[in-house]
Length: 138
Image 1 (tube, helix red, strand yellow):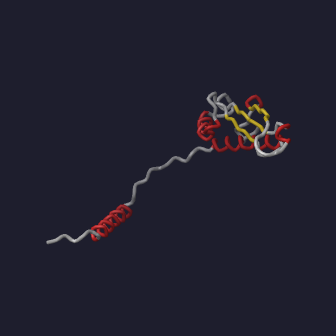
Image 2 (spheres, helix red, strand yellow):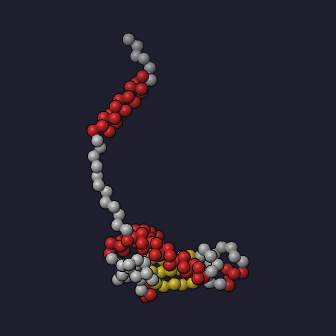
């Protein structure tokens, strides 16, 4: 399965199991195994660089298993073939998202004018609040 120019997944890395779908569908649900469960052995994959694996683990969240696999379950349509395509597309999108390196944050300092505006706003607010106080008897 080809993800991009650099990443191509081997067949042994993907395992598909088909089960019966849940929800409405009449007798079709009881007879046909149309839901697909796609398992990608991400931790053992030689095709993914380590930084991509780390980002994929964070993106996958609950779908990442303890043994380092990504588990996707799709039961959107009644067609087994279509569910299989959807699962593979989702996996490809997840891996593509993991290949993007996050932009490093460059810390900035507040400008002198913004500091001045903040302090003036504080002073103004304090004067408004102090004017609400009951007058002191002399």
